[in-house]
Length: 430
Image (cartoon, rainbow, N blue to C red; front, side, top):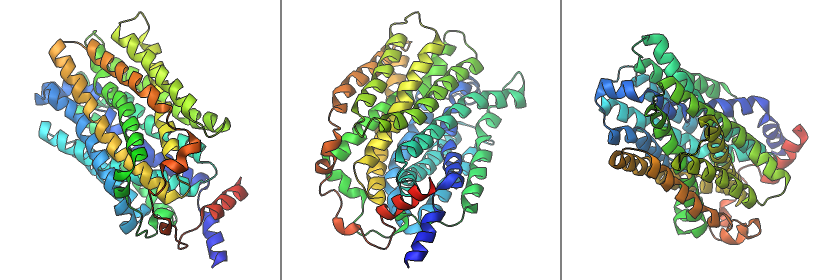
């Protein structure tokens, strides 16, 4: 039995599985950012209004949140391998359907379906990453987060290019939106081709349920902070290209700014967890630094400071990407067991993304009633100011007390590899 367990441990993790994680993560934002740079041709072709445009971001974010809450339960029944495959299949179907979408209803339906697929994947991947790389959780969570942001950058940059390549002077927005079905299918085939690996998330845990998180103040605090931080991201994805379009920029130029912001997110998401981990377990100073960068960017937009758009995009991307990946590490750090930590991270994402889904509605409403984005950027800056004191509550010395009683200790069964065993296996690979 021990020999079989050791053999399984040697098979988990490694470079091949890291590549799979990156491929899967690239699909989790590309469909979301692809529509914003093509907003004008989409509006001209479908007659979609600003409230409906906001729904192209709001619906998938809300679907991500709702599905993330149920993703852990689906994973326990179907397994992480099957659940992630199901999520990737939903993303592929949603993106492919956009090639024949004729109106706003079809676009909104595809957005919701893709969001549900993303939610299913996101509910399980943090626990899978912690299980496969227990001694490198900071680096691998950073890689996973960076790949998510990178997918968003690809969507913003490549979709306008594809639309112009297929349509010429009249951009073919159908092609620009549907091209991401190919990436989802490729990731799905690669994921299914991997040798079957058993994760803690696949083991039945009768006492392990995200419903317990509803009674935890720490779980709600994590979810609120995660949601408010991502509200800035969803608002920028929805409106930043349009903000520059009002200043006479083309769709490709606006998409390039969004892609540049995303490139900064990738670098920050990849680097910050590793840097923060090298200095200890206390992530609070680094989270404050990321929020300060966001505040600087939103203030520059709100007060129309004479700062180049490139610099604003880089500063905002740095703050948003680092905060996202650090929040993921923060949730996983609260509990030592991968399945329990994954359930807490799933709750944080589930509730958090539903909170984040409201931000484009608020900023879009402000833009529609004021004719500009000045007050919208000011609102996002005020949210960041409110978040700063909340970061001080995440003292790593109080993680155990903050999560005491969250999950029944009986949930830790011996039917799955122990964390210590996985740590030993991972150490042997280094």
